[in-house]
Length: 372
Ligand code: T4K
Image 1 (cartoon, rainbow, N blue to C red):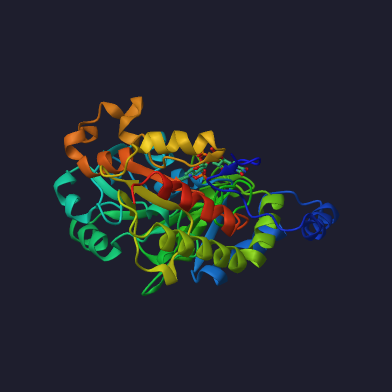
Image 2: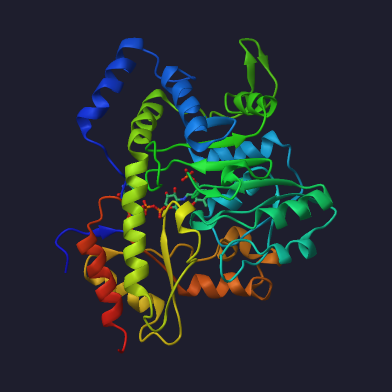
């Protein structure tokens, strides 16, 4: 039993004293929100750090998703994955759009491009894939389908901060990418999010939409929302950015230790063993297979009994929640891989302050349950 509970994640917090100068600066300027200096600086620094052209900050990832759909005037039906956090599909419902779920790939756990075409109808206007756990989707295959059917692509990149692929930032793909800066994320602003977009015109439309639709003092062009990030959140982001490379390095060490320690454990499958040089180590998902001595839920409960709070991201599937259950695409026969993975997945603790001795303890605990 651990005296102190271990959670699946914990935010990276620099010394409090490092944050004080930012607070003093806000106090001095008396600008607390509405695109102040911290906000402007964070947008610029994030563009540079992430290697993207334009970024619009938001008060959370969910409002950013909602706004991204509005910015591209998405309507009708949108093809998405049931294997994600519920906010992905909620952003569609909030816009009066019907989600159409397609199955995931058993290796990457991302939307399976081979399943997209048969889900397209005359009402389909876009695809909303998720870079699940920060592992890049098959962006080329998705774009080819989108081009063929004239569909927009919005990536839910909530988990994909700083993730790269062979062409640079994974956030450059599709029409828009949406980030979350929630406290549980690799990079956080307490609450926060952003839309990454390729051109200044789209960024300007997003800026209007996130500020009630205001273009100037007297002109409102859309029923926009209040999606603005405050100065205090932006300031925390600036401070986080100073530490992000350290945070990613520490996460990478934990990821490597898990991979080494869990290799060859009967009944434990580590998800996505490739591309570790370009990953952000935001989650450490494992699948509990039939030949492991405990069920997934038994292992989850056993961890809890020793004060280690692992999580079943993503169980239940989005399509199991009452507001989605009745959709034809929520039928289990349509999404067998997602259904099976959600019954088997367990995300192990991973965050910069997690001690390597604790990781060893978690590995030993998983191994102990396994026959030699
Ligand atoms: N799309 C995807 C694919 C997403 O995963 C998410 C969010 C979104 C969109 C929407 O983005 P946001 O609107 O949230 O920006 C968490 C987060 O609330 C959520 O942001 C995240 N995905 C989701 C995967 O996980 P919970 O309900 O599991 O969080 P909670 O409060 O149980 O926290 C998990 C553990 O983290 C706790 O046991 C302890 C630790 N923790 C948490 C918080 C909030 C801390 O140590 N400090 C903290 O401040 O949803």
